Length: 387
Image 1: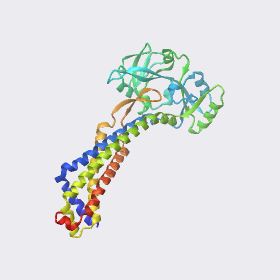
Image 2: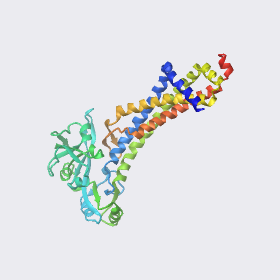
Image 3: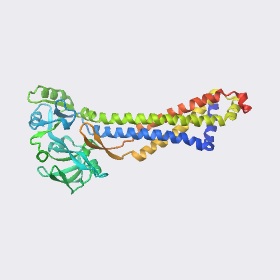
Image 4: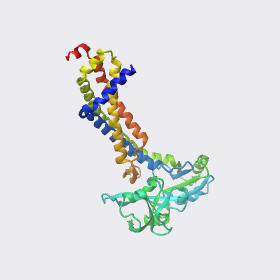
């Protein structure tokens, strides 16, 4: 049976060239499905990556109780000093999270951009942050450093530029990387200067904490909860950023799947039409094979194999198109929880490409199974007579 299947399948594959016009309909249709699905999911993966990269199990955030974003959190500066003195806390850095209108490079329209006022210890907590151009800002001066993704997306933030924010002029003195994390979409400056510029006086929005060890999280959380001076929560860094990305990624994933389903229906009908036509053209050929001893099962499997082969070719093309066109492509989107722009790169991962190929094989299977059954149900004598 295997030899019969192999013989018929090789013959079918060789004959694809003579039917290239109809076969290309399957290839192109499924390539489109895979390309769209992989591209949409790579967008969701890219957004998720910027929020989940550069998180550490020994880092946490202190925010106002009930806050689901830094924008909705507001704390007194004294909170940082209280937390810093607690057992289990190695470093506590107060930070101010605000948004400002900065024009986008592509359109020139203003967009909400994160401006973060940081303490010198903020850099000790984030060793992954590196200055790649220029220098670090000097505390007490109107100087800022800009993330590489923010520099790529927004205008007027190159080194040497003067950025006007809230009637204050800030000089861009450096560009930084942060291992691809969301920090690369932000603008950083000195905390005290930022508090004055944004009229926040001594208030902050978050206290970044590095614990002595990961096992100290429960201890510090209990100390914060028991302290009557504090109305705050301690949240693990990984959990915090994972929740920040959920809303955006879920919307994109659902939209991508819905579009892929709609396109898949069209691709399946194209495959069915193509394979039914192939069976109709080869009616005499199939009947002859059956008459000389070839079984029905090898004929069925060979038709399905041809459909899945065409679908796989389309899947490979679609996955490659997505990778070449979108992988590493930088865009920005609105963070629904903070209403600020987050720049991210499409991430066409091997897992997404493999998912696209699996989808293409599934579509090929569906597109080949019904024509395959029609092929084996053809009456041999009638087919040989051309009826």
